[in-house]
Every structure is written in C-alpha cells, then in structure tokens.
Image 1 (cartoon, rainbow, N blue to C red):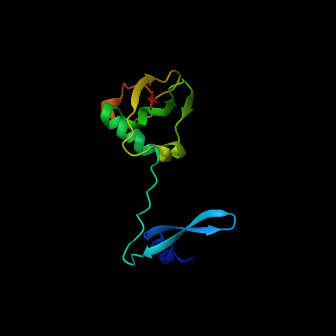
Image 2 (image 1 turned 45 degrees about the horizontal axis):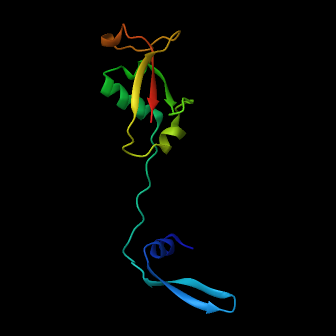
Image 3 (image 1 turned 90 degrees about the vertical axis):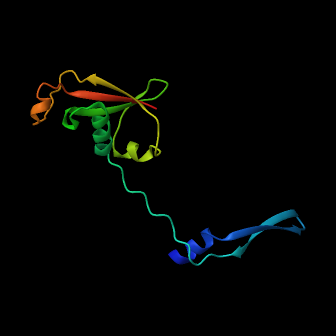
Length: 127
C-alpha cells in the first residue's frame, strides 16, 4: 500500500456491520468517508540525553559539562543509567524528581571560569 492510501484509510470514518453466518454472528468494518486532504502527523524528533542534561542544568543552575551521568531510579529502587533510548521513551511533560549528588572519584571537565570550583555531579531521576 502506498503512503497516500495508508493516510486515506487511517482517516476514514468507519461503520461496523454485523452479518450472520452458519458459525454464528460476526462483524466487519465498512469505510464510509475517506478524507483525501488529511496528512499524517509529523514524526517526533529524537530527544538525545544531552538535551535532558542541558534542561536540568539550566533549572538547577549547573554547568552541563559537570553532569557526568543521569540515573533513573524507579519507585522500587532499581537504578538504570539514562541513555538516548530511555529519553525517547519518556512521555512529553513527564513529571520527575531530580536529585543532584556529587559523583565521588570523578572530576568536572568544564572550561567555564564561573564553574571552576564545581564538583562532578550525577542526577538521580525518580518518575
């Protein structure tokens, strides 16, 4: 099926009809109206983990280069390192609790003078 055919069928108005067969009652769907002007929704752009780091850094007034990792902690305590795949699965507008903790044994690799004394941190997200 071509893309324009898929779009037309996706936006169709359907009516359900029942028919009686020798094995019992079954139903089928009949397309009543196909909108030829409709377009599929635009594809969502990928959301890399770097965008999440920058947003959290702006809210917490941190240097994004000092955030060495983001860890998701679910409600049962299981910890997962957040990568691009996990960020893709997070729904838009998801509420999160962000805890900033010092990442022991790691150094901040910033060149910004205003954050020169900043320790490397990890963000622990709970959602």
